[in-house]
Image (cartoon, rainbow, N blue to C red; front, side, top):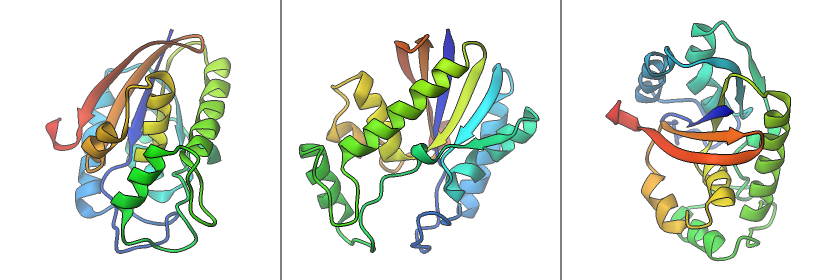
Length: 190
């Protein structure tokens, strides 16, 4: 049995429009520091992250506390929306949830995001049969992982978690088979 703790990054600085380098806000950094205490009694043996700065910075304190390196996994990155910035994110997101193949020019469909995230997750589960794992990720990426295992997780659920940063979800596996999905941390509630 493995527990995989997916951590949706803490609050980012949206004034930085570059997705890869967008940092955390001061509030986001403080929230990330609180995660160290939350994880101190867990059996964390490996830490992975999206290559995006906000995800790496969210799990860095946990990695330092456990004296572990963070292994970057490109496939855990957030979805690419388009080559530019869009103003109507909510309308775009709803269109994608209504049609998992919908995408803008230069962007990714939710089906593509789900496929690459699940592929990466299955590789990790095959490699690590013991110990618990932390994966730093993003709201849409994590939503697609949850939706893969629980088709009832939908746009309404995505809207509910849209502003929860950080958000920790534990998924327990027996090999690559789902045992349970449990929401653990909802931002300021810890």
